[in-house]
Image: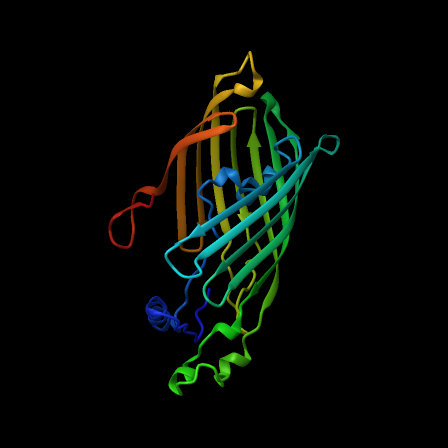
Amino acid sequence: MEIIYISVLRNAKSIMIAALLFFMIGHNVYSQDPHFSQYYASPLYLNPSFAGSAGKQRVVLNNRIQWLVLPNAFNTYSISYDFVKPQLRSGFGLLATTDRAGEASLRSTTAGLIYSYKIQAENRWVITPSVYFGYGSRTMNYNELIFGDQIEFGNNAAPSIDPVTNELENLNYFDAGSGILMYNKNTWVGASFYHLNQPSISFLDREDRIPMKFTVHAGTQIIIDRGWVNRNNQSYLTMSAVYFQQGPFNQMDFGVTYHIDPILMGVSFRGIPFKQNVSNNQSRDA
């Protein structure tokens, strides 16, 4: 993500944010995709190879609001739909996400189609490669921005004559991804690759490419009670972990959850053990 010559001065918090933006002008600022803490609650977002894995039609809706104390905080939505065609050994899916942030309503939206193919392997294992093809857009409400010349002349309502305003424009781009998943009845392991083509997401007439996101994940399920009397009362433990890297950013999540339909509860850890962050502290986030 690039920072352009923009400051938003609506209140005291915005002044502090603007100071930070001015400090970063001229420097590259890397961006990353939104991340859902309950990663297996957004299966297609995690890995397109999950398309059709439920064995029936499935609709998933996710929402995350980050940093609530800030005005117009990050607000992310994701919706997906997938189903399986056993006679074709194929899964099909649709994934759409939108992310909104800031006073200028910076919005990133993507929507794409997913196809996965089921390969029956030995010992009841299934291998599922997949592809994702999507279309993305980035928009911003430029009327909410205040530029340097408006501050200098003390008239925020007057149109800016900063040359950069002639370059600003919303953009659209093509996106591609792929994944692979291997699973049996109780265990799974997989990897996914989003932004394989690393599309440019610059609002200016420049090249500013989003880094490819690589994710690897695994999990296993331990049956506690098969619900012999009532199939709706099955209970089981799930242990899972996920690691992703995008540009200079990386993150690991792992945890244990207990399920007794329809209730789920558990604990998880986010961070990379034994790795130190820029402050020489252990990388333990949550």
